[in-house]
Image (cartoon, rainbow, N blue to C red; front, side, top):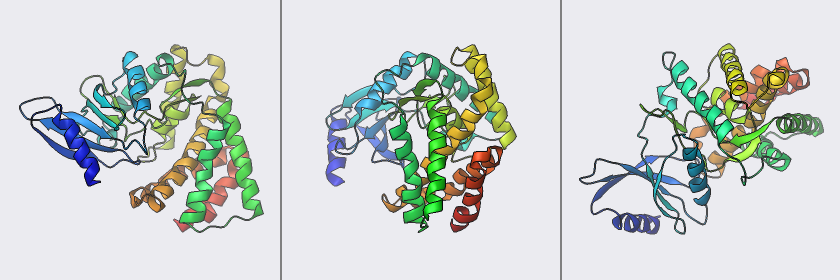
Amino acid sequence: MIQRSNELNAWLDERFNQYDIAPVSDDASFRRYFRVTPVGNAQRFIVMDAPPDKEDVAPFIDIAKRLRAAGLNAPQVHARDEARGFLLLDDFADRQYLGELNDDSVERLYGDALGALAVMQACVPSDGLPDYDETLLRAEMQLFPDWLLDRQLGLKLDDGDRRRLDSVFDLLVENALAQPRVFVHRDYHSRNLMRLEKANPGILDFQDAVNGPLTYDLVSLLRDCYVCWPRERVVDWAWGYFDLAVQSGILREENEKDFLRWFDLMGIQRQLKAAGIFARLNLRDGKPGYLGDIPRTLGYIVEVAPDYPELEAFGEWLRGRVLPRL
């Protein structure tokens, strides 16, 4: 770690005569971020430190360029060293959506985020990005039994449990693959959106973007693992986005009959994945802070499952077998 810090400081020394540097965030990956304030320069920067044996900065550079070309507010890359994993970026300051959302601000902030999402889906090309295919969808959901049920909770599945889980996974994969394919940010939520006075929101953490289901980013935003809103309000926002997507040419009026099911079931796929990731962050990476978000994340599934007969038993199983262990 000391050697890595020395390499980063040497890289910055090549660009600035004097500067202050301070850590700015704890990331759910191997990346680290620091704020760089050059002495005598009013502009501040963020430097990304992505160890090249663990992270590749090329996707970040590529996606940032795509988003900015569509008029979206992604950080500009001011300097790069791809071989060593250093990027010098715009500083979007510290006003994460997560800390800014409240009853007075949410309509405006979500309105900006939904507008940006429509531009993203209508205007950002997804060619050349990984496909959010069946293999990836299943691998993500498998994090739930592997990391949360087995390793975190010590819950051993019997044959009936495994059949139930397999049936749910089949249903969720079918739902995801039935949707129109668009550019998918893949982590479009309150911790990766920054409140800005101009060109709101600032969009971060997009390097894992894929070509995938239309409702994935929408459900990431509206059924956020870190902040929860009343279900009726979420559904109203989702339908508002449907109208916007039709106006933008992303969806057609005839998609109305499938839209809410796409949205609800896509959310369950993402929530199973997220719960598994939170357990893995605790057990593998020594980051227990995400464990407190698991009940909220699985609570969405318990809330939605009764609306779909094929998921009702799964929701009851989560309520009775899993949530009490948390």
